[in-house]
Structure formats: C-alpha cells, structure tokens
Image 1 (cartoon, rainbow, N blue to C red):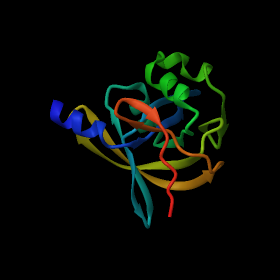
Image 2 (cartoon, rainbow, N blue to C red):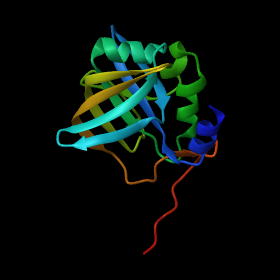
Image 3 (cartoon, rainbow, N blue to C red):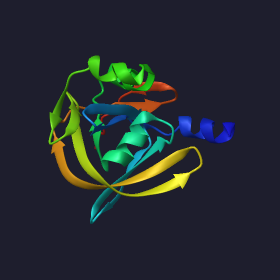
Image 4 (tube, rainbow, N blue to C red):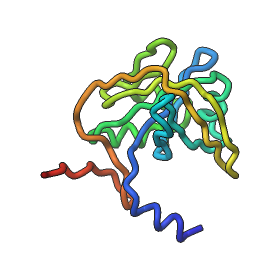
Length: 157
C-alpha cells in the first residue's frame, strides 16, 4: 500500500541490527521495526521478513541481540541490509558475548530470549524478553527518516 509507505517515511525510526548465533554461524540483518512492549517484564518486539535467514535462525536459536547503531554507522546498516547474508560479518567487527554477536561501536545492546511470535502476512512479529542490557555510549543514535539516514536533533529546554 503506497499510502502507508508514504506515511511511514515521515516517521523517524531507530536503526538496529538484529543478530543471532546458530550452528556455529552469526546471522544478522538491519531492522527498523523495533520497539519496547513493556518494562515489567522487560519486553521488546522486532518484525522480520519470514523468508530471511536471520528470521529462521532467530527462531531456531530462540534468542537474539538488538544492536542500536550510532549516528556514524550508516555504513553498518547498509552492510546488513544489502550485502549477501554470508558476507555481512566479514565486513564488520564484532565479538561473541555469551553466544550473541555484538557489533563493535554500537550505542548499546539488548540480549533477548524469544518469548512469542505473531504471524503477520510476509513478516513475523517476534517478541523478546530482555535478559540483559549493555549501554556503551551516550552518542546520538542513527535514525532513518524520509529515505535517508540522519540523527535526532538535540533537544533544548
């Protein structure tokens, strides 16, 4: 639906890379469909296209990591959005932390266990219970707005 697509272009979205590790391989993709659901218990949701290797492996592993990109990491988003799946992790620096692929220089990371899913046409809404949070930096996050990467404006009081 082009009207919805046009409307959503006007909504600034945080840019994240969702990662998981399954059968000895890291998997990941750029995701802007991410939001918190509740604070008690701490819960988030992500929406992944069903046919992607990342979606399939998040479900198989039962866990995922949400890497929040900084304003300087548009190139990382592009790698995880456009590079062939098998090449993505060879183009970025990352560490395995408790079996989760954590990207270098991100603002923070949520470590989640899958607690539910909702089928929604071409996508799955995956609900994750947040088990651990790490914040690495107070830099500004990368946002996607009007088909471009940007940064949020600093608020003044």
